[in-house]
Image 1: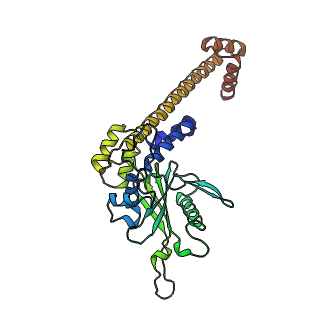
Image 2: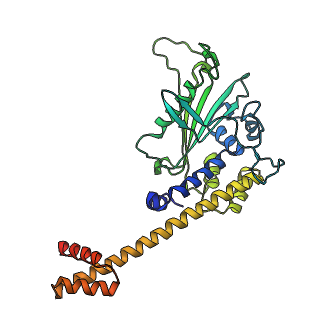
Length: 333
């Protein structure tokens, strides 16, 4: 579905229930370790030179690494690895509660006993009334402040873990399509020249990964991968084949089911929107025809009662509606 079609159907044509189910499918798909590994490799310096399999092994620190949630009707033998170890709810007595789409831990291979806390958000609306990077900074800030009393106690700030909030923007503005921007703390010497250990301040990062539904997806990068994975115009079978062929994504029973779920919900949402649009279009066309007839009758007969009678008989509408449309024509005549 193109952004234009999506926006035109929008809030008035897509029911909140269907959209909620579609959002859930999108989050479930993004929570697959293979996709998260590609995401981390694309925007986290600690993983840029690591293989996808190496990164998969890092996701979810011990003891959650390799934990597989078994769904109803599934056996323990499938190999899909989905994130399940870290709460997605962050409750603060003073700051309220926020719910992350996906949040997990990942070990940093080059640093002893060091972990990264990652939040991944799927975002439909690129212009919600504020800049997404600003919201990302707030989410990252909450992940920083919530570590006290959990990751470290008292003043032992050396145990503070780096946090990374990553936003998957499904329908970005044109100039942002296919782009990845990241924001983090950097050191700047204002007087003299001395350097702090980067690990002491490199604790917060926000990244925007902007998809591009106009792309031909020939590039082997995370944007192309997610374009395919989240494209609701591609069938589940074709999607899995493209992911396997172009990105070596292993097809598992769980992954196959989640891809199918998303495709099915996408089709359902689209069909509901189209049907509602057709119904509204037909209704508007009928109203226009009635107004045209009333306008023509006014030219030849200025008797309201006669005109109302003819219109109600021809179109089988209520007298109240006929009078309302008659008044509208008189005002515009």
